Image (cartoon, rainbow, N blue to C red):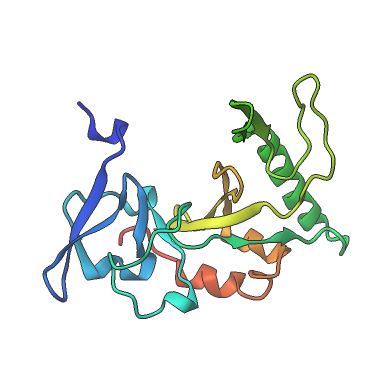
Length: 203
């Protein structure tokens, strides 16, 4: 049986104290930052360009690999953002349109239930964008700020994994430089983040 076809925990030994720790599940490193990868020895090493790492949040500085709390999504609290579309920048509009298209095509599911009548149903989640709803359903006031950055990884270059904070569905990954079109979190930090996660691919 191929262990990559089932969800299994990924474990490693922390170098500083030789403690065995859980670092993630499959290719999602919930409990390991990118910059901490050399501080552990993995039981089953995976290629760097296959992994997604926990976001490096300032409020979690100083926490050792494996000691992080799990908050869902990519492990840490996701970083919400809004795409800038009011500055008439063509690239920003293209970025926004691509996210909208992917959000509709990669729809998730939200469960709605009523304990009083004992009913539960699944409804489609388009992550704040307009998609085709089932017959009898309609939009009231769709929320736009539902997408967040979950994790960071390195492919040919640094990329961010984007998902929905409501349904938890992963929507897409984008070049981290594209986050310069987003506010408030990545407006000034995209270039610095890109440098942080830049690699030669052989690490």
